[in-house]
Image 1 (tube, rainbow, N blue to C red):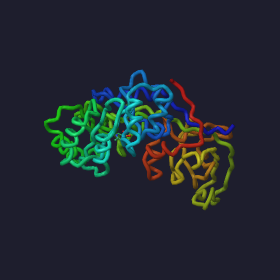
Image 2: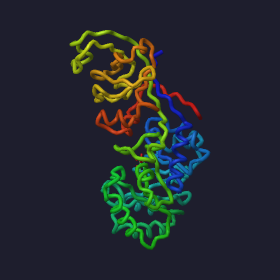
Image 3: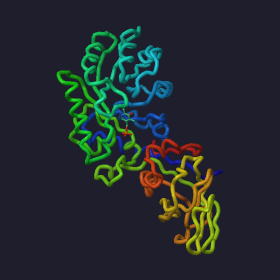
Image 4: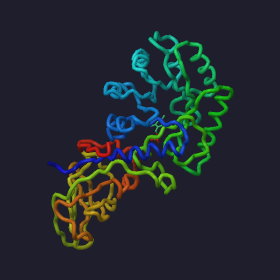
Length: 357
Ligand SMILES: *Cc1c(COP(=O)(O)O)cnc(C)c1O
């Protein structure tokens, strides 16, 4: 059997969830959209169900999978509905629903619902992606109340730059949010992972941690609270072939790496078809036989090469950690010019193996 697999440590997931709660002192919706950032939404939801205040997903398709598997906790649809026809099911399945646009507000007013729903009313406080314009916010709130279709409204917005700890942009967004909600007494929700970790002064009744649950830092720089996270996923495989090259020999497609010295090359069963980033360059860290080494040459579809020259104890069959508790996914992501969010979401073909459930 091919040795590539992703180990998922559900105990670490629970630790990270508790950390989000502890740091925020708020209720926390565990964000498990996109199959829990590649970690398996259902297993993650089951591991958290006893303690989580609720879950957040991108769309009703993701929510229905959770409900079908018996998840009873609140589930928020972060983009609400995409067409009005989803509203009946949202009410029936007791899902919480973001309203980010006036067309959604109108659809709720016109809908016939079996019971009233919980709405998270989203303000565009400066990201300019989705969310109501500040001038429409209070009116939308009043119309939702008047519609008779809504039992509860939570006021929310989303940060564009909370991962930039020295940027004034997040405080500016909070000011816009506070002005827009003036006089409304409703629960509020602003903070995603970088804001939970790095912006303790931002008030919240509800936080929405995603990437931090999986133990990866959203910051490009070291940050004290992020250091308390425990990586959940270990992407691992084994060395399937070893060769000794003299100096001056190319390795892999395009000969982008040429051995500068006599080099011992290990071939690992892991490639971009598994979701390992093809753009990870020579020098990207890996762990082999418990020691740090590095990628050499181009990543291919099913294999990649690593340098074993300074790890003489490593050989055929040696275990390799591509990312996990020793090689941080965020470090691999930076090398590959991306973010840990994307390298997790790109994961495929490798079996997910759970522990700590
Ligand atoms: C994805 C998402 C989150 C979680 O973001 P992280 O940076 O992963 O914590 C929170 N809120 C909204 C609206 C989202 O879309």
